[in-house]
Length: 571
Image (cartoon, rainbow, N blue to C red):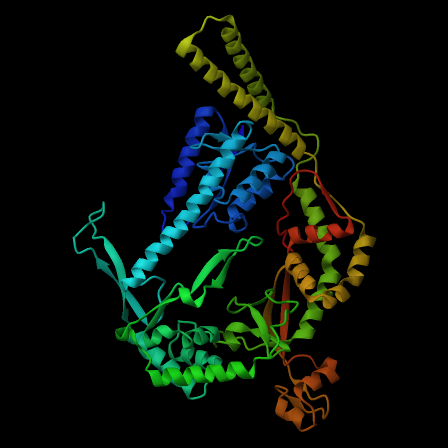
């Protein structure tokens, strides 16, 4: 039988060798039972609270849908490695059972091929979920006690350092190291000086973006961002007020992601540590007053708009994302927000959206044909058979298994000898089944992959695509993120810009010059669409072959043949 191994450990605090231990247990079990380990999937430092965030497990489930399936059983150390959510575990078992793939938990003695294991799976899944609930409560109770003792209960906060407090009884661990009973915070004077400078700049009228740029120039290497500055300005720890139990994290039932929820105020706990104060009360009050005033001014502001190319545009210099700058332009976020990138190219939103959409509609059929050609070329020619050696090996195994069974049926063996003989027979027969399935899979894979589509239907789809993308921006964004991997923006050659009104050539068309003609820069671009950019920007669009095949199913596109996973194919 062909088996796939899946391993997982849940947090960075656990040893990475935990997966090695799980793999060793599964490998030993496979050798004892005559099975073949053909592939493996892993999730490192990932909680099993939700199936949706387990990328390795998702890959295993996706691979299981191949035709034919690449493995006959998914083998794990314990059922808790799959999930600690009873609903997720049940969904995984049902999905793989539908595909005729077994789940085997070695240490739990569970094999979903046996009907009697249904109760065992349910009970074990319930125990795993209850364990996670109890662990959550125990952890919360322990942190509550640490906070009341004055110890740190969270991650590192800028401006402070933590030092361990060791057990006064002198206890040591198995390695001879002293055991800490908690961690106390102390002010980091170098970082505290930067914080005081940050607060001073804000009280003098500077905004978060300007402060971030100044700090990045003054203290390079720390990559300050406006939102980082804002969160620091709101952090009451800097005046010595430390809070606990203000928020809780819950798992979203649909997405599986953690969602932050505020607890009722009567459950909040707070302590004041004057020795940890960095900012004086006067400065703190000035900062909070300015923040409150600004929030009041923008109280009626609409929520952030979703843009068509959000998350797709990449800067070629720093590898960061392009984002909306000033509502109408895309620009490198690292340059315009934190001044950590030298790329100052700004591209008009409407212009680049039209360029990307026109390129997509113009090239999609060609990309699809390239995928089809490459898929056919990568497959073996039809009609290939299993090798003569494999056939002879299979015949020999069958003869050995039949001979052993003949001895068993004769009744000459009893006790331990009978048990050992039956074990040998089972191992031989498992090898026979594995080789037969591999032979059938090889014969199936010899058939070339066929991608069928009607070019006329695809052309009709593409004809309506631009209007559809602009009509429903959220749907259009999902389509582009599925179809394209990314759009990389590279520098082009500089060019002279001619004023569309007076014809004067300028190195850069400035707002001040357009004001002399009674126009804003925005009106100039709208009134003279041929104006172009002050710099040429070259777009390198990288399509996603698998995304193209998935999205074009609406056009009747079908993929038939072996389990085909499209690669990049140099598109």
